[in-house]
Length: 180
Image 1 (tube, helix red, strand yellow):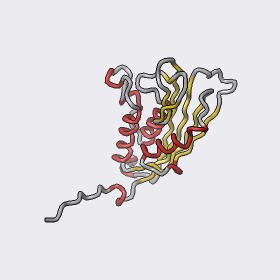
Image 2 (spheres, one colour):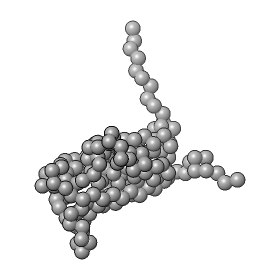
Image 3 (cartoon, one colour):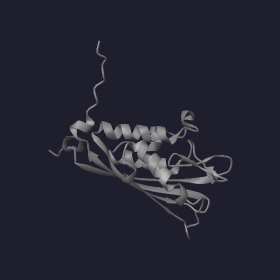
């Protein structure tokens, strides 16, 4: 009888995430949890953070969980304008509950403007904080959509590597008690 992945607990798992949003006037531009100065933001039911949405789907896919749309349906008014860090936090909880932690993440952003280079370090640091890893575990590249007719959209591709949590990392720290 074949064993399930839960029984085998493979040492590593890989997840892939993709997201895209159109630019819209009148909304702030948020990428990777950082608000960027730009004349347009990304439309979406939540805050439209294309990078955090792709990260969330990569995490969920790596542990074979439902995708972001199933967990946080755009038809639910509760998620209107929601901070995408909430979605990522739920996905990371599911990763930890499955016995894994993030080893590293690599992301590619495709957009005509604004230039990501000046903001890349801050985005990497914020994504690393949300994932509970060091910033050197988060790769970020930005590309322009030359010839793709995507001047009014932003696209994110993300791959994440998970590793089985060691018993010491998975164990919760005991609460400190006061001595009397």
